[in-house]
Length: 286
Image (tube, rainbow, N blue to C red; front, side, top):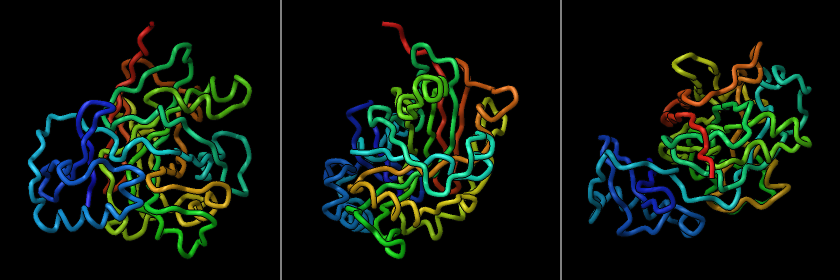
């Protein structure tokens, strides 16, 4: 099952993407895909509604904007340096445990929304990632049960302003949290449709040039390990998002670095999970 949200930013309605490509409005029976939805068994109820033929649901105009496939989460937890080639290109050593940081939830963005260069941006970068959405509360979860807490998967791009991240006090969060820096989608594929999250290809193109190409089997810490590990340090709530890290090929790792510029076009894809498309634009001046 594929979950979508459509409509103008901040006022999206829930829907589903059917196998025949039709988008169906689910707002008659479901308020939103948020913490309450996942916590109350909403996925099961939605699956039954789809199996019954989506009674009362009307087809959504395909020209409607798609938003991120889940409502703004309580947390966006990110994993740094989770692919060996990326860790090497950063030149900061190989982690022996997952490196965690947070993105502000105000960075939440749709799959085809523009990415805005923040004021003073000099080193804008891209990172294609597999993201997962937590389906039920996870605290001190054993690895053997970790995947039972995952509602589904989506394509994610961890946009970063490297000067803010690395040259202004060493705080990763400040370089990761600008508005529009967390696009996800274009849909959420439920976990039952992904046989193995460690067997997915992922890639990123900038202006048509392939920059990143890898597969999730190259992660140093697997999806199962990440859910278990992160749940030791914070309670993961239904609807929370975990971005699992990026492979090599980011702008910062190139010689010389190929930072994103206004007008550039970024495409990120994960096998079976759809593609993000972002045009880079300068943020408006107040």
